[in-house]
Image 1: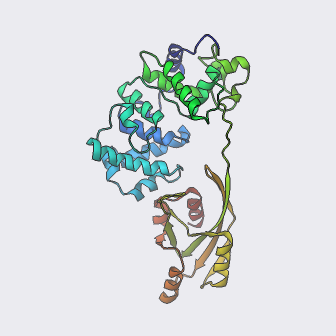
Image 2 (image 1 turned 180 degrees about the vertical axis):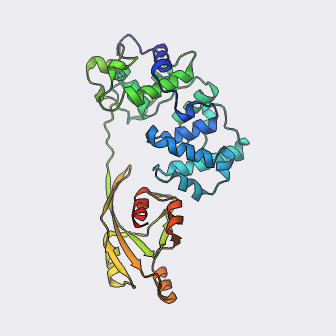
Image 3 (image 1 turned 45 degrees about the vertical axis):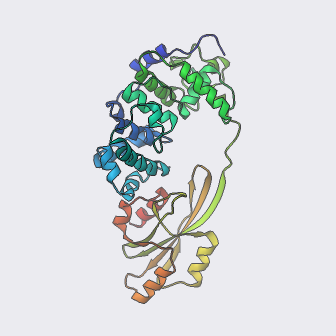
Length: 351
Ligand code: SF4
């Protein structure tokens, strides 16, 4: 490491002149709004989050409104943002704030971190922005900035090393101006010290930065243990009768938990089921969709079974009994529900 340390003062000055100041969640110290934005921004780009953030606030203007909403409605509004466990935790957190804290978010990072879905870094960001607490953040972007600036080359998949990086993050904190410093770190990670080809010439920490001096910023952060990605292959049944669709609610826990989706089968099983015991109507194989999730790649093979609108009640109930438990949705009702993104696309194409 170099003798000169990255300075908080330089980052604060840079943030005030070159940082972001117009994001919708920056014009407030309301912890409900800051919390909502922080959760939405995890693993999601600012440009995607803005519309969702505004729609959420319109429907749920405060934590009480969110806590009182049915989970289905929260998931429906979240639909398309991905990582749905965030939405379920968000809802659970709103309920905890109302039930255990009288509707007011706790004012310290330590207490915030005890709420569902709020990790240490998110708790610190809320406490710094809303209550001026002098506390460090360390999300994925900030890890990248700090490991590069400090030349911190220990493997971050080892918990003890991550703990040391937290200590470095704390040692860099300014005495005053925690809001601008925290925002500065976020802005630097999002706009300058990017994953590929960081814009080092525009960086307030270019002079002390170790990775830049070494000419290899992209070598940081060091993570040796690679995530092993799995593969899954399933068929989906899109059963329609006129403008009606059969949807099933996904089990909790699991992928897409709580969302409404299409009946899912092992790839081979559905073909056999449909072809061997088909009812009336047409069956069409739709193009396969590849969906990438955190831990696996999912090959989804949709089949569209178009029932005639008028089917004998006995035939219809025989078909319903052969399906996973669910219910009929009008296509418009389906599109207003919480749906996984690939399923939404299939239904939109149908609509
Ligand atoms: S100088 Fe470059 S690598 Fe170093 S912190 Fe700044 S942008 Fe990142």
